[in-house]
Image 1 (cartoon, rainbow, N blue to C red):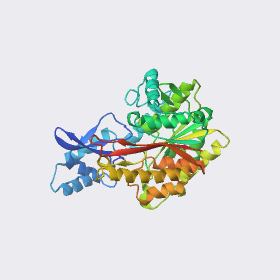
Image 2 (tube, rainbow, N blue to C red):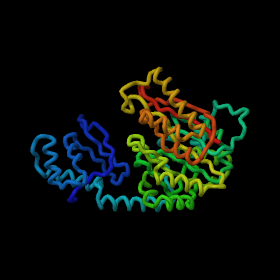
Image 3 (tube, rainbow, N blue to C red):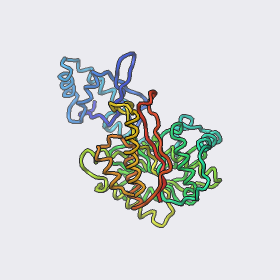
Length: 407
């Protein structure tokens, strides 16, 4: 048994099992194929797996917590089961993580995670689906746009398809003339302030989008290999980059041209900056990443994409209110203020607006948009789309999305 067991960073999700509420311990890295569900009483024991207590001390604290003596074998078996499923921060889990990274990197490409789940895996059917989203969109009089960056959603196509279409159809010329495409996506499972790379090319139903591995290597050398690839496995399932990569490949496919290299980057949460009074502009890793990106791409024709959604509000996101008409109108104004900061290229105002309210609207594009604006170092642009997407059956919760083109 591990001497001083410590639980890895996990997501605790309430579930019902055989009519009783339980806790599902979800491992973001999916090191094991087994799923562990624990009853509420036993879940209290997990509070003491902090790496500072022996199993005996954990057991004593657990018994005191629940106010009754238990057989040590219960604690012992629970710890053993956590260890068996790689949920403890120890050598076994580290070896499993290392092996899974080897397995991921040995694949010829990053397999689409959402094909035949969120969109068709058949390229012809996918094209019909994406074409349909633009049927009502009138581009008469639209002049070829050759800007430097776009803001695209990463919500599912069923809810956000028309907004995706408005952005990507208008960005077609910029896509086709770019030497390189960088996609900054929200890392929903990522750590705080992470900047996660992969050398694996992303595949779509249309084939494989090549990765600019030289740029990935340069970024990794600047911020350190460990930081760059510590959470690389998040790329396997994360949808934020994938859902924009499919639209990118669709544009190439429609034009009948070979895709240019792409660099997919997952951006972790800014929660710690907001809550602790820090700032990403003072973060050495992030600033090094941005300045390296600027230096390495100078002189290239680059299109940068922030694949993001905006607010996540209502009961579905643990808010104690429903999104009635008054709140929706207020949200439109709040989002519009953010959009205005974006199209002015004002990264400081964008950050300050969200930080001032402690990100109460849960803007999951917070870090990618901010880093995009830092990278551009001044821009101006236009908003081409905005929408509220329902997030529960009663339409009391929503996700807001926007489409923006930046010069």
